[in-house]
Length: 461
View 1 (cartoon, rainbow, N blue to C red):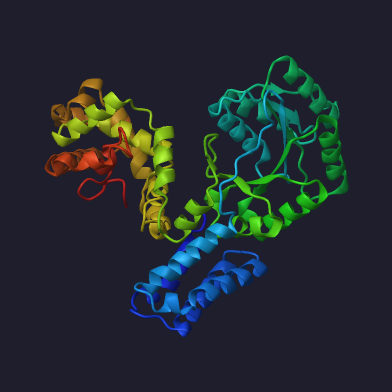
View 2 (view 1 turned 90 degrees about the vertical axis):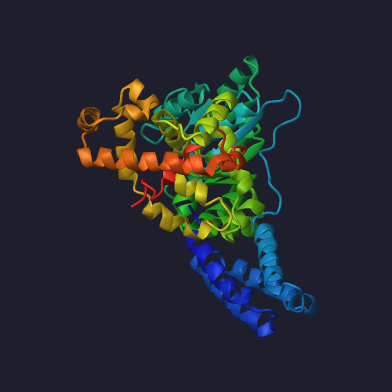
């Protein structure tokens, strides 16, 4: 997850403040020096960092803060508020034309930023809002771009309009709009061509499309991993054609994250969504306040709850049944397999822990500690069992274990180890009794979260 390095450095900067009953002006300035270095290392724009530190210092060195009941927490709150403000304060959603008017959205960006994928991801988001939004293939230059859009469109369940590679993009856009009017579409998403760098030909083509079809929203997709260059790209696109918002792709792979902290301040344009993975469902609404909390290690429980609601596929009845079996120590291999599936749907253990208060700083270490190979082996073991064995762990005997090991392609010792740890988990969950009830609202059907740990935690190295 992005910001892990920044998060750790910021929390280290505040750690010394927490140990002091009262703060001096020198204490605050020393902490803010570390904050400044951390932000610069995260590739945040220098002018943005300078103004940020100045604002925080002005708000923190007053007598009310330094002599308050809990000055260190007050300083952290000021930093949190200013980080939120830096990223836009309020959540901004994609704007639509009123009534039955068709909203034309033009997706723009450099080649390789993930524009085509982001277009499909956004179309998938619009379906949840009741919007009928076809994708339009206006990238006629990049090999396989049209095919990629068609594949992605099929996966998210939206139509794709294309006219091959011999028709000019403005004409394609015009024809797509005419078709949309006839077929009562709400939104039209134009996936335009990118370039390796901004050039006059690209900009002129985008300007012509805007003029021909009356583009209502121009959304720029930038690669978060390019750091400060993403901010420069956003600024140039805005100056040349005008943009209404930004999607940050690949934020899950960036350890700096400076683009997210700089784009709004430098361009004045809001971040609308962030790409948090390769799956077409991995597009999150951007909430400045939640992102600020994540950066400062305060977690993001609201996003975690929303992620669970969107991705957990068990019914309330199934959830209740799993919880009851857990409390009675009758949690079986089917339940365990379902828990693994739900955990995967939510992005994995490290992703979930990064959203919990106080856990974000350790997310990178946890990700390294989680043995993905061991998780795959565990899944292979369970899938090699018969339906009867999965639902009744007590059936296990040496003959069955040897057959399961052979089916999973593993040594018998691995199967014995897993089953022993599974039995320990069952006992532990029975002893814990009703403790699982408190997590049910957040993780319906995911009682196995406790089972993932066992007594020694078998998915871990």
